[in-house]
Image (cartoon, rainbow, N blue to C red; front, side, top):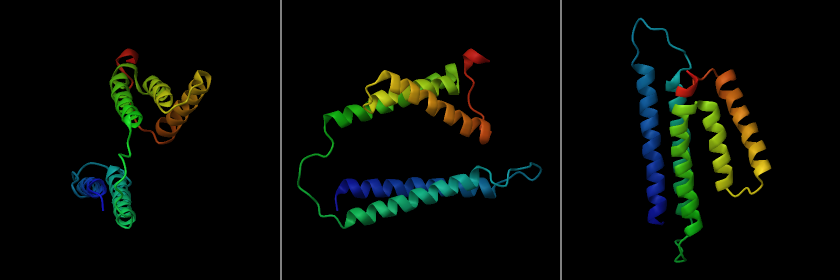
Length: 155
């Protein structure tokens, strides 16, 4: 088995263990005179942790059966550029969210990310970004009542 596969699998298992531990901590450690949501963040963190643990184990199991190839490097220069660009888009998204708020930052993020992923038509990118931003707003803010940053421009 390749060293990278082992590192990826172990990393997923460690992250999942931390998520499960934090979820358990949130469930167990509660102040006695405070009301809590029964489906609070503890169960969510545990569910995410269990999902990541299953993915890590599946990743290790599937790749343990594949023979180690002596071929070339799987990731080429374009993939590295795409990866760095996506990380930079996430940094811009986090920075913009504190300034412009959730909705505008999400729209800008999708505009950048869809372009990075290879979509060429600006009309399609704009329409898809508007639709995705609207859906995320509807799901997270309207339906799930998640409080998102408003940004310093809209306070």
